[in-house]
Amino acid sequence: MKKLVVGFLAALAIATAGAAFGQVPERIPVPAAAQHVTDPEAATQAYIATMTPEQKAKSDAYFEGGYWLILWDFLVAAGISLLLLSTRLSAGMRNAAERVSRRKPVQTFLYWGMYSVLTGVIAFPFNWWKGFVREHKYGLANQDFGGWMGDQLKGLAVAVILGGLFIALLYGVLRRTPQTWWIWGSLTMIVFLMFAVLIAPVYIDPLFNKYVKLEDPRVKEPILSLARASGISVNDVYMMDASKQSKRISANVSGLFGTESIRLNDNLLKRCSLEEIEAVMGHEMGHYVLNHIYKGIVFFGILIVVGFAFLRWSFAKLTARYGARWDVRGVGDTAGLPLFVLLFAAYFFVLTPVVNTLIRVQEYEADIFGLNAAQQPDGFATTALKLSEYRKISPGKWEEFIFYDHPSGHTRIYSAMRWKAEHQK
Image (cartoon, rainbow, N blue to C red):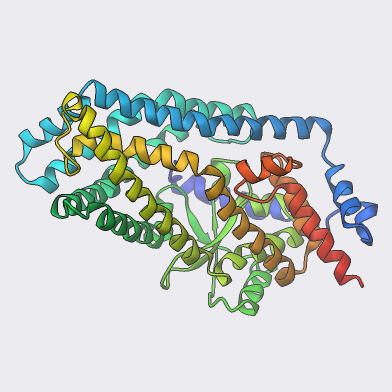
C-alpha cells in the first residue's frame, strides 16, 4: 500500500530528483566484451560480472525467499478463512449486519467492512514482516513505519469502499441467478477488473503518490519523441515521488479508453542515465502498443470464468458437508465469503506458473519492442542489472518458468546483446 506525501515533502522530493539527475553520467560504462559484440553470451557474462559476489548473494537470497512467500501468502489466506468459518465469526458478522439493516446491499457492504478490518488485523503481523521488516532488511525500502502504516490504512480504506461496492454488486448477482451464478458472477468480476484498471491511474494512485509533469526537456523530449514514433498520442510525461517508499526504479504507460498516460518514478531519474531511461520507456511503450492491457484482461477473464466454474463445484461440495457447522446458508450468503476466498486462493496458487508465464511472455515481448524502438541495448542491459538488485539474475530454466513473472536479468541482458550483435553486422 502507499501513502500520499504532504505538499512540502513532495516538492522537496521532486526538486531533489531534478538535482540528482544532473549527477548521472550521460554515457554508461560498457564492459570490453560488450563493446563490439560477437558472442552475445560472453557479452552477457561480462555485464553480469560487474555485480559483486555480495550483491549476487543478497539478490539471490531476497528473491528465493519470495518463493516461500508464495506459499505463505496462500497459507495465511487459507488459515484466516478457515478460522472465520470454523469459529462462525463470519456468520456472526453477517448476523450483525442483518440487525443493522434489512436491505441486502447494505448488509453486504457492512459485512465486507467488518471482514476487511478483521482480516487486516489478523494478517497484520505477517504483512508487517513481509512489507516492512523484510524490505528494510534488504535495503529496498525508504519509508519509516509511520509512513508505511499510513499507506496501509489508506489501502484499507480504498478496499473497504471500492471492494464493498463490488461485493455488494457481486452478491446481488449471485442471489438473483441461483442456477447460473458462476457465469454471471465471473462476468461481474471481469467488468469490475476493467473498471479498476480504468480508474486506478486517475483516482487511486494519486492517493498514495504525488504526480507532476516532467519539465526537464533532456528527459521529456526523447520520451515524447519515442512515443510519437510508436504511435502513442500523449503530450506530457508525469513523474511520481516513489523514492519516499522504495529504491526500485519503474515506469509505465497505463490506462484504458482515453486515460492513458506516461509515468516514471523519480528513482528512474535519480539512478539512471538518459540511455537507460529511454530503454525503460521503450519497454513500457511496448506494453501499450502490443495491447497487453487488453490481452491481459482477456486472459485473466478466462481464468476467472474457469475459476468460478471450479467454485460452483467445490463450494457446493463443501457447503453440503460443512455448511450447517459454519452456518452458511448458500451461495448468496455473505457468511460464505471466506470459503470463496479460500477456494480462489487455492485455485490461483496452483496456477502460479501459468500466471507467471503469461506475464513473463508479455514482458519479454515488451523487451524486444523496446530494444527496437529505443535502440539502447547497453542502457537496457545496465537497467537489467539494477532490477537484479532484488531479482535473482541467473536462475535455472525451471526456476524461471515457475517463479518469474518477468524475464530474468540474464535473459534480458542476453536479448540486448543479441540485438546489439545483429545490428553491428
